[in-house]
Length: 128
Image (cartoon, rainbow, N blue to C red; front, side, top):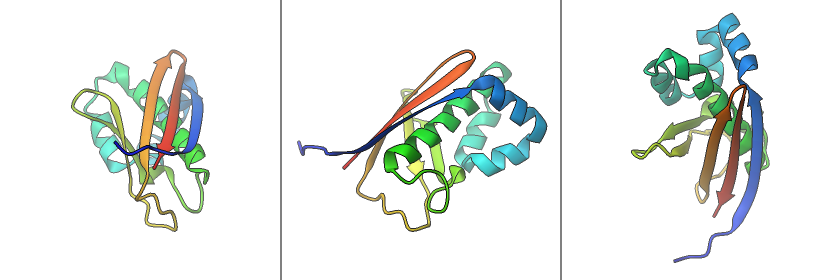
């Protein structure tokens, strides 16, 4: 097995109530500006009581991933470029559709998500 090198780590915490306020105000505009199409499909299929936690955890994950990559959200990486979905066992997996000057082809992205109302937290580790 090849030794992995840690490229970066990142963490973020989000108040679920803040996401609720923003979502109630902007609805689908908030979704389309901040979430990947794969996440939006998953979101719309969730039971109502899980939706806000889902959004908050993914919002935190996107921030954590950007911090771990060392680029932040902005010119080279947008929230909608990052999809945090789940594998067949329910563990988070990350897909980045970045068309800008950010070469992440050699990176593996590991994310852990958790929530305990009113907070959601994410931790990301980037390896190569």
